Image 1 (cartoon, rainbow, N blue to C red):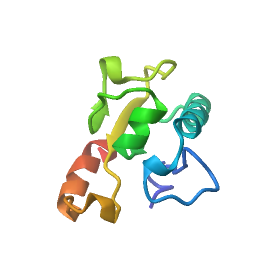
Image 2 (cartoon, one colour):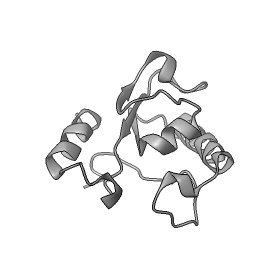
Image 3 (tube, rainbow, N blue to C red):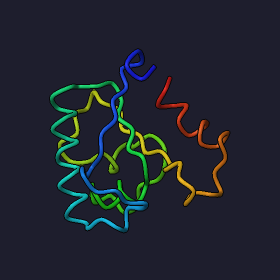
Image 4 (cartoon, rainbow, N blue to C red):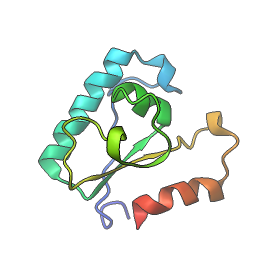
Length: 112
């Protein structure tokens, strides 16, 4: 199903199993963000979804970013103008306040 929808999945930081972004250093997240930027430049997808607001804020130095489509000042430097950037919540147990319905609603824009 992912391939049919042309959806790819990658990590900011490979080889480390963590349960939350705070287990990674800002440097690790920023290096990972540069890797994501390189992939986006190479593959030129229509949309990219970053899963986890904390990781996104640290990785791209956007401390005031909110969930949803990123626009204006929240777009990272070097991000291709033709590629929509979304930030969606991490669906782990750490976000116990989220439900399947609320998660689906936040992913809806990415999937349209």
